[in-house]
Image (cartoon, rainbow, N blue to C red):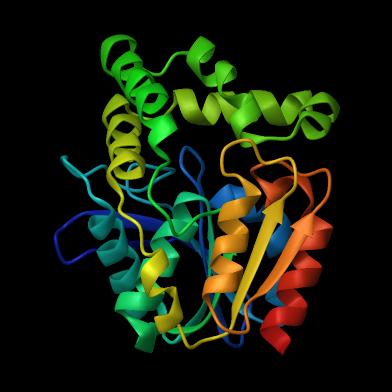
Length: 264
């Protein structure tokens, strides 16, 4: 049985770990869990101690009462890193990347390097506020239905991967519909209410890698470029044919980029 980490506020965060060596901590995206990094755990633990944590309300972690803010997720992740071993190489995808970049800014002593995958350091674009609010109202009124989960698949995955992997789409839908209504509602609140830290990117002094799928429909490539130009020396890897969930859709490309980056 994989262990749980008890946050000082009382809620538990579930995680898995494998391998020995320098710590790599993985934070996943909204409506996902640690299993999105299964392909990374097939390779990287050969050289590193890899730890993937379930964000509050996701996977097997507890769902604290709302309202949630991005600062709550930052506090969760920072305390978790302190508990499992710091400093670490921190990897975050989407919401996990939004959290990770803030950990790197507010708790620099915990981070040896930062990798942001299909993510953003900016606030939610103004044109997306109404669609997100509508999504949140639907969750509040109807819960997390299969129809709702399937309607968002194109935001999570590129069409080539969706066409080739129907079983993976069913797995994703099952994962989303198994989440509590409160967790999805509060996760959306975090995404909608997060502020921008773009003007602070210059404060990051650790090495930064940015990986982004070229078919990402949830977060535009310009946000990856914004991070890569905002942090001195940051490297940007664009992954052809991948959508918003590049570690799942293009695991070889992600594993190669991560391995070279962390080793360097």
